[in-house]
Structures are given as structure tokens and as C-alpha cells.
Amino acid sequence: MAMALETFSSEPQAAQRKDTNGDVTIVLPAHFELESGDTLNTRHVKLRFHGNPNGPKVLCLGGISATRIVADGPGSGDALAEKGWWRDFVGYSAPVDLHSYCVIGFDFLPGNDTDTITITTHDQARALAYALSSTGVERLDSFIGSSYGGMVALAFASLFPERVGRLCVISAADRSHPAAIAQRGVQRRILALADSCDKPEEGVALARQLAMISYRSAEEFDQRFSGTVGPNNGDSYDVCDYLIARGKQCAMSLHCYMALSDSIDRHRVDPATITTPVLLIASDSDHLVFPKDMQTLQSALAGQSEYREISSLYGHDAFLKEIDSIGAILADHLAEGY
Image 1 (spheres, helix red, strand yellow):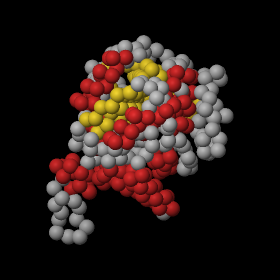
Image 2: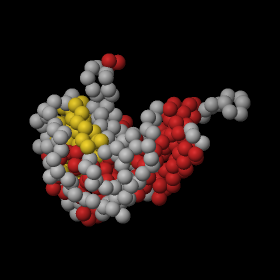
Image 3: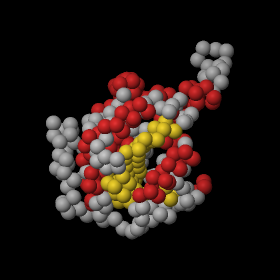
């Protein structure tokens, strides 16, 4: 199994970051290898810079459907050119205030690859380290990672402890729970079946519907949906209408979904290798990343750590929905460091 852990930061790279907001495209070097030995069809990766270019550098990564667009783009209201996936948490006068911080987003590998390849969170961390070096960012002041992004944050700190000052990991642990692996395994079998039937969009939509059931709590479903249905077999339930709509909104390709779903399940990081100070935030209703697993992670970390658990109706998706509670924790976390 190939496993190249160097950052490649000494190799010349054309991309240079300007002191303005926007995208930078970086080409990974030809000798960049995935741990699996698989090959990327495209070596282009993108970073997005938001906010104060002279402020502390804060990297924000989210779940597998998140992109480099963390905060809203130009415009306002309905005229927004782009809507950031974490727009309620990152923005001007938001908990992560763009007046003060330079926030960096990153598009996960494998991008637009047309084959299903095997990618680890360590691969993501190495590609990210190379991209940051290519834009002149050799050290992050803080790395905030939620869900899959939290896994990548842990892998990054394990590989490059000198390149990050502090971690904030939300709803992520050092490995996936078997119950969560079981759910994602079914999703990938749906995707494989859809691929064999030449119906990739339908497969992605169904896989996303199944995922949404695990992202949210049973208590939220009970409060939001009545469970009533029409008189005939096949009539729609309101909760099913919600899931179908969410499935249609998923923009990932089938092969990207397969790769990132698998990447979550093969994620393994040794907590004893992480010396960076870590703030862990868990949701008490999360049934994908259980609070007890994050507590176990905290007990095994080599460096300073803090564990915070919030009460939430939103399960694993608390990192997207709990603006007040998580937002306040994030603001304090950043303020304490600078």
C-alpha cells in the first residue's frame, strides 16, 4: 500500500494567494499518491478564502456534501451569488466573524473523478497541507472540522502537528462506530445497484434519503411529521415527502458519494499522536457519532483537550442547526486563542 506522508511544500507551485477573497486552484504533484495506491483522474484541488486576509487563519470543513464555499458569496438575500454551507456560523458579525478572521474552505477529494477510488482522511489531510503550502499558508491558527471534516482535522493534526495551533472537532471521533458503518454500507450497496442499472442520480437520491434518517433524531421526526397518509397503498407520507425532497437536492456524483462514504468508514486516527489542543463538541442526540465515543477520544488524546456536550433535537446535524449553542462555543474558542 503506497503511503506518502510528505507535504511537498518544497516543490515549486504556480498558485499564489492574493490578499483578496476568492478561489485558488492548486494542482497536486504527479508523485502525490493515495494510501490505497489508487490514482486520481484529476489533480486539481480548490481552496476558498473568506474574510480578513490579515486575520488569524481558520480552516472550516464540514460533512461530505460541504464544499469550499463556507460563507455566503457576493450579494445579499435572493441576489446571493453563492450560499455558504455554514453561512449561519461564518460571516460578517457571525460567531466566526469574517471581520476578524481569514476563513479557508477546501473541496474534498476526489472532485469530479469518474471512477470509484479509495481515499482516506489522511489522503485528504495531505492534499490539504500541500494546497495550503502552495498558497503561502504554512500554519493554521485554528482548524474547525464538523462530521467528516472533523475526521480530516484529526488526521491533519496527527500528520502535521506543527501546522495547526488548535482544533475544534464537532461530531467526529477517531473511528466510525459499527452501527454507523452498517448504515453507510447499505447506502453504498444502493449506489452500486443503481450504477449497475445505469441510474446513478436515482441511487444518489435514495442513498441521501437513507442518510438523512441517520442525521436527524427520532424526536425531531416525531415533532415535525404527523405520519398520516392517504387511503391507498402507495400514497405518500409527509416524512417521506421530506426525505424525497432532500434526496433530490444532493448534488454529489455517485462515484464521489461512494468514495467519501467509504472514507468515513475506514477512518482511523491514533489519538496518542495528537498533541495539538483539541476542543470536542458532541450532540446528545447524535446516533452516528455517539457522545461516549468522543469522550473516549478525549481520554486518549496526548495533548490538552476539552469536551463539551450540547442538548439538541437535531442529532448529528446539530453542527448545522444549533446556531446559538455551538456558535457561542465557537466564538469563545476563537477569542481565547487570539
